[in-house]
Image 1 (spheres, chains in turn green, orange):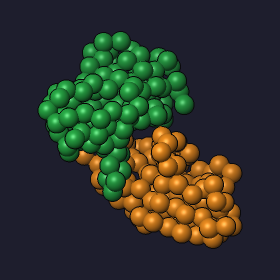
Image 2 (cartoon, rainbow over the protein chains, first blue to last red):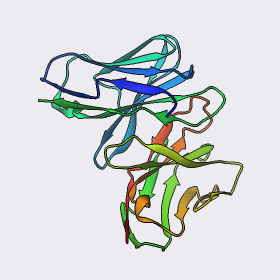
Image 3 (tube, each protein chain N blue to C red):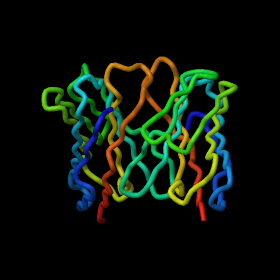
Image 4 (tube, each protein chain N blue to C red):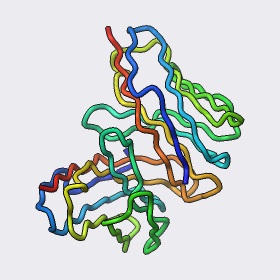
Length: 112
Length: 114
């Protein structure tokens, strides 16, 4: 599973609070991605990174920010969580010479 | 961006039968098409993929076909087994980009009855 871990694995938080999810990889992969998965919507890209300090928006980036200060860590922050951000969040990584993406175990986030 | 449509949304087959899932995409420049299998509560797992310069690829009981002219690709599972039961997702890259952005279909729930 490409040595990808996510933390926390489960989190319940209240509307309006900030939340940070962490993705950690040990494969030295250049590319990292954050997706959210909701019933009936498949996987949708939130933000992605193509190198340290290099990030860009995906399809559903509103309300989310990211940071990548080290190759191995990619952080997703919800500045002020809303109930619509209740979802399962997956991180994925990809090496530079292939298109194959490998997913982390996911974080189930509930915003009450 | 890319638009990926996946059909059917649910599929039930008898053990030993074949299953076919179809996807269409909108961007003619898309060049990479992976398929993922996701069991309940687990992460999506890459099971097979195909590049745009190849028409078909097989791996044991699984095969993927690509029709670039019609902009559709399909997953074929032969001799299905109960452990094939899962949600399957197709995806396509945003054409012409090396960033590897994937656009996913909405998934197919495959149930294989013993």
